[in-house]
Amino acid sequence: MINQLLCLWETGTAKWLAINWLVMFQKANWLIFVLAIAIFVMVMTNFIMNVSAIAISLPVSLVIAKYLGVALEAILYASLVTGGMPFLLLIGAAPNAIAYDESKQFSTGQFFWV
Image: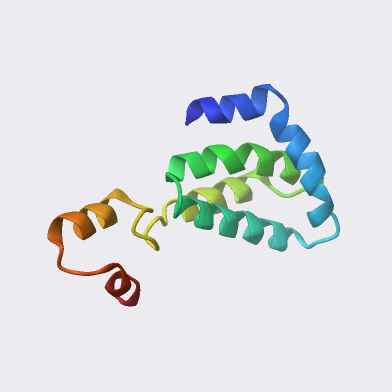
């Protein structure tokens, strides 16, 4: 996971992605950008490991934040808080998968209704 972060940062890929994605947020309010990053991390952390979601999104979002004048701490906090929410899907967190697989007391459909 750390390798992903270092590769994005040291190769300049994070900066390249940030500059190309900057067009989407150029005229938007700073809060829209922070919420977009938070939602992106929350969705990603439900499909992949939360550390990977942070490692992929944080370098790019921090570079964009510099260009938009958004406090880096706001991006970091929003990413870390939403990165800790991998409970929406069965595959998002190990306890969900263990409870589903080992207990056999509920189906996938029942998981979504609880």
